[in-house]
Length: 509
Image 1 (cartoon, rainbow, N blue to C red):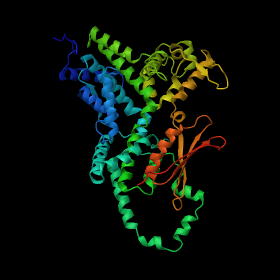
Image 2 (cartoon, one colour; image 1 turned 90 degrees about the vertical axis):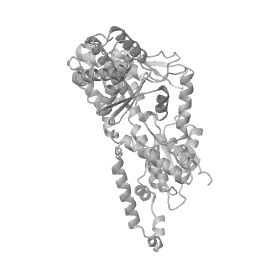
Image 3 (cartoon, helix red, strand yellow; image 1 turned 135 degrees about the vertical axis):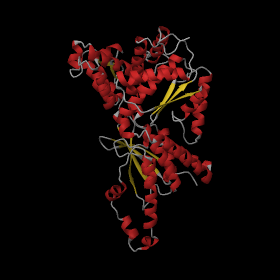
Image 4 (cartoon, rainbow, N blue to C red; image 1 turned 90 degrees about the horizontal axis):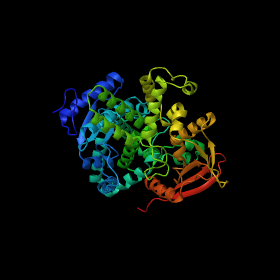
């Protein structure tokens, strides 16, 4: 029997237990922490269903494609053999916000992941400027339903193989199918369908085959200068899928719509890797604060709180550089949580060093307001550049190496002094900048009235060229959608010298 005041006692739970836990967590999250969240929808699923969610990138439904089955088998094999575990939860940036909880979780873990996902992640999704700018949480579920139905209808009408060829190529190019610097509208299925109908009706109304028979029409087309041609096509264009969807000469309307589906879903996911450190740090800080308050107010017992501490410690562990579990970069849970906790400390109990480095927040007595401001207005790169403190740098034993290929040794060029702290912070922030990692590939020219060869450029520097095998494999997907030869030149961004050239032709019909 549960002791008076406790939400639960032991590891077992039922839906009444979840409701009590949710209500208690909601009071702390909204009334004490001031979190603003979408309405929550919490679903309990099995490990098999969790594997299904993994394969669809965490989405509750999607269209069929062989890559999802391959991913399912990979995750299932790794899980069954004990090589990896499943997440305690998966949360979706939607309105209502959907949180999946594993039915194998204990009562404490169910409460923890409700706090982590349904309130921590939920608040971040709703308030962070990247998600507010690039996504429309209330539209994604309707759009996924439309996408699944549309792809299935295309498979019935045109054949599975034909649809898969388009999806394969579009998936391969999805990282080059997003607007990175504005120009994208959040998903709005009803408005998009209305515009598509209006565009189709207008094209049918205005089409007249007599126009192509006018004398001199073709001659005018071929006398366009390169500059006029590029201006008319809106070149250069970095969103490759967008350009192919709008301009590719041989694509049918259903193929263009499938490319559009892949492009818009890729756009929806675009903010997530840019704010992973902040998102996980926010959710971990929130769940730890909420579970601590439940313990302080006597709503969970010591045994439950020890389970919370054990789980959180595992999540925020930062492996050493030579640890088998280690990898490139910092554990986003570890660094994110450390920075959130450090901001809280500086607001309440700053040192003289904190006052020198962070005069605007040190000792302001408002850690919750400071954190909510950071969660709303920064992405990982700017957050690290603004808030990474010398205290956290020392705690994580950070330093910077200069790797000069002309020298036989490495040089430690940033250590724990004022200049070193600033250099480390700049370098770490740059490692979260997507512009540093994503190649700058753009469509630069195509003569639609001539040979229709698609010309592309990769702006880069010597020594940072694309892997030839990968570049040519990707270009084959571009050529399959474009329908004609594709050429990619790798150009020195400083001198405009051509460093390498890759070409691909479309597959035989």
